[in-house]
Length: 163
Image (cartoon, rainbow, N blue to C red; front, side, top):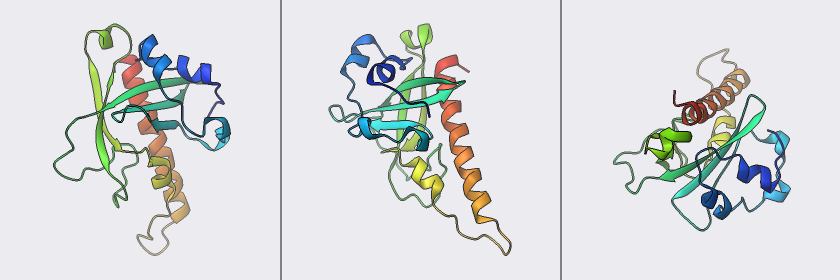
């Protein structure tokens, strides 16, 4: 992922107001992030428990999305739409995001189920179980990571473009 300054981080959000950008809490470890090791940057707000943030790289540009957690928890334990982890080592919650531009100002939103504390990169990197004799565990792991990136970028594009 592209290294970001705090100013870059705040200005990357395409569906947040100026006030929301100014008030967001940057990640605790922001100054020490290993940018080359990140698939995307995601964190929960320390001040507002229902807010989350995701920044992904699209076409060489950092694009940030402000997410709001739904008030109600799902009735059943859902699967994360991003990492598709079936062992569910953590909670999965429903997040919604205003679309960028006029659509978002008119109340148009997009929603998805995501690991509550954005554990998706760790889930995708966990060594999968051997499914059969000759199963390439490392290839399956790489495919899970690539699928995660496709899902995150697809969601960010949907917020950005309205597709």
